[in-house]
Amino acid sequence: MSKCGRKKYIKTNLRQMTMEIDSQQDGSIPDSVAESESAHMQMQTGQNSIPTLAQVSVAGSGTGRGSPAVTLVQLPSGQTVHVQGVFQTPQPSVIQSPQLQTVQVATIAETDESAESESVIDFHKRREILSRRPSYRKILNELSSDVPGVPKIEEEKSEEEGTSPNIAAMAVPTSIYQTSTGQYIAIAQGEAIQISNPGSDGVQGLQALTMTNSGAPPPGATIVQYATQSADGTQQFFVPGSQVVVQDEETELAPSHMAATTGDMPTYQIRAPTTALPQGVVMAASPGSLHSPQQLAEEATRKRELRLMKNREAAKECRRRKKEYVKCLESRVAVLEVQNKKLIEELETLKDIYSPKTD
DNA sequence: CCTTCGGCTCGTCAGGTTTA
DNA sequence: TAAACCTGACGAGCCGAAGG
Image 1 (cartoon, rainbow, N blue to C red):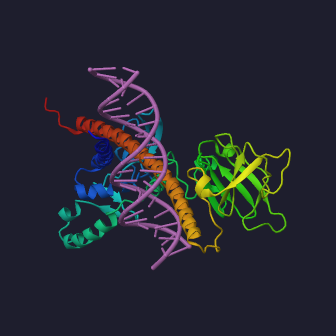
Image 2 (image 1 turned 90 degrees about the vertical axis):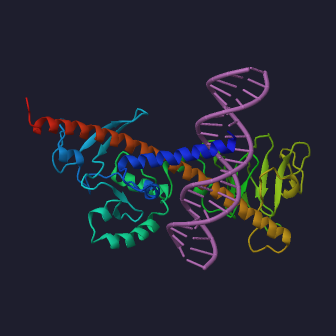
């Protein structure tokens, strides 16, 4: 199997797994509907549903009518989950649409002929509603709003973002650069430079540099008072004005405007970003001063880099949510299996009680 | 040791959805 | 309605296991 083929195989498996989970809830759902609705399944709790275990009063459950039944589920990962009343028994299939509408699927037309035509009309509306699964964030937030054990995804930032280096968590900078080592450098005009290292801890990777403008410097010229050492041992400063300042190990030039030689100061060179810039570094021209095609191109490149960076972060976040979503589905499977087992046991008990003894 | 395979992660693109 | 956001799809790269 080719690598590309394997990828498709994996994705197909993921989709298939989701559909299998759907079928566990109600096999009567048409495939086309079930697939689109797979993401809308919602863990029902005692809050708005009748707890199943309370109704059937499974022996040993210790739950009374009206109080949420709590089920302890041991997940394959060893995690123990407390789950309250998972599904509703009166309805064969209750599926939440993105708008949280309760929709009964597949049994409506069969059970009520008078509502058949209406159902057919509504069917298309429902198909429209369900044609696209909502985002994992929405799904998980709906799940976690009812289930205490499920962590909720924060709208703005998760706990991870609080510690992980994330350029999005910074104050909106004037310019954002990325170095060849993967560091993100945000320069807020007249304020501080922030360096974020994606590969390290957020606190450690974030460094603030103070910038001061003395007198009336040339356009774009900025004195960098401090900078960090890059991976290859050289120090690199980035200043507005489409130039990059690279530490020079041989020559002795002052970093400040390259004007004077100072004995103890490290030396630097100003290089054109197009020639000497490390791979991946994109410089930004100050907005409003774009005239030449080169500046326009630089601005376009900068915007592209910014967009790619945001999309990169979005993709990471999306994958994280997807993982969480899959975990939720797996937990749900475990819960349903436990419920199913208990119901079967209850059925056997009732059979023993009410079946006439012939012998 | 080398090759192949399977699994996983990541970056990017495209297109749909949401938001201001 | 444009911008921002979200996510499926795709390709690339890395890593460990298995087999020759």
